[in-house]
Amino acid sequence: MMKLVERLLACVGLLSLCIIFIYALQDAPTDENFETKLINDYNVYALQVPNDLEFAGEPMPLGNPDILERMDRELLVNTYWQSNGLLMFKRSKKYFPIIEPILAKHGVPDDFKYLAVIESGLTNAVSPAGARGVWQIMKATGRENGLEVNDNVDERYHLEKATEVACKYLLEAKESLGSWTLAAAAYNGGKAGIARRLGEQNVSDYYDLLLGEETGRYVFRIVALKEILSNPDKYGFNFRDKDLYSNIPTFKVEVDTAVTDFSKFANKFGINYKILKLHNPWLREKHLNNKSRKLYEIEIPKEGYYNVN
Image (cartoon, rainbow, N blue to C red):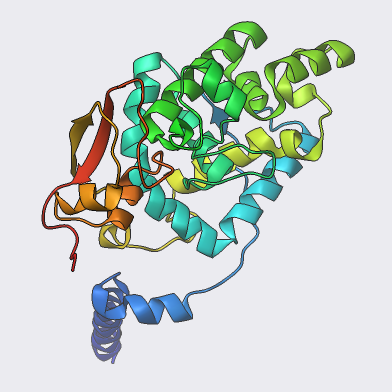
């Protein structure tokens, strides 16, 4: 009798393992079941704030209950704004490879790429105050740092050149304020504004400052996006590499004269005006004045990436 029971238990155990194995195969993230999982796997959870969060190597004082609650807020808001979160994953695959080497070249910590995410959502945004581009640069700041800014050409929309300007600003802010965290806050609140608040409140750290809503949330938002974009599975974001956006390979065409009609210019390279503008958003009008015969580099997508009639 005992041997019969043992055999039955062994069979039950083997059957259970088979069922678990089959379920695991069905649950794997394949193209076939991706859509089903997308519909059925939605749940909302309280989040555990990691105890080792930091920005640019500078730790967050999460033992402070105020700091913990503010960080928890930003993680919750950005985790459960799912459509925006997925767009950030998609766009970051496209634009981070452009931003990262420029930050590295200037010795600016890689974490600052997430500052661009919260500034503009990695789009050529326009703020009510007049800031433009991925890095949200004001007209005066752009001109002071060598960008051409006028109705015909606005290099605040030139991602590489705008990233160079952002690096310069952040390095100056770090030098004057003493930390990368304060430099990040200064990108929103201004170097003079942050310095004044530090003096008025007799503190030396961002996390000790009482600030307005926007600047007070600013670094927390950056760290939240860094944490989420670095750990998609942990925060419930499901996607495949093919779901993300990719940069279209281009080559540069040098122009040192006026261009009277960019539609005709584009047609010479087998593209249309819309596609030319997608790759060169800093060209603000349908022509290029260029009275000074300045040398411009215009990005042209390589053949085969667009179907143009």
